[in-house]
Amino acid sequence: EKGQEFKPHTDGFDGPVTASGFENSGRMITVFTYLNDVRQGGHTKFPKLGFSVAPKKGSAVIHFPTTESLQEDGRTLHQGMPAVDEKWLLATWVWQHERNDERYNENNLPKLSEDVI
Image 1: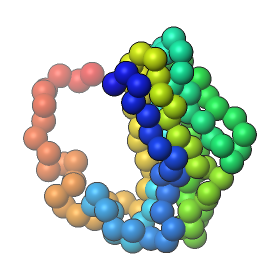
Image 2: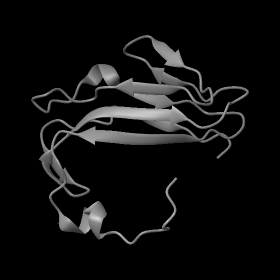
Image 3: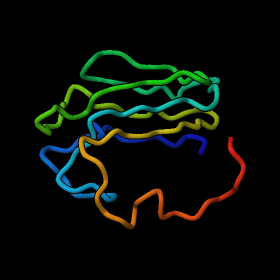
């Protein structure tokens, strides 16, 4: 939404967490891809690392918010700066362990379509 922003955060946790079907795990990798160009603003700022990334359609940012021992890496602190127009992105996380809660098992979800895309 126009003018929306994300406050500073790391995407990681300090220690193992149980969430979204993962048990005693952590987000090891964050990947987000910009889905549109933004005329002005909307940068993703990494203040502790001293740089920001301009949203450009098709570009991606990858960072590692948690160490292998599941300690939050504060260097990955980032924030989404306000955009003059809309900014769309796709975010995904790679967790240390597989999901073990059957409610989240992809094989149990209904198919949206038989088409392969």
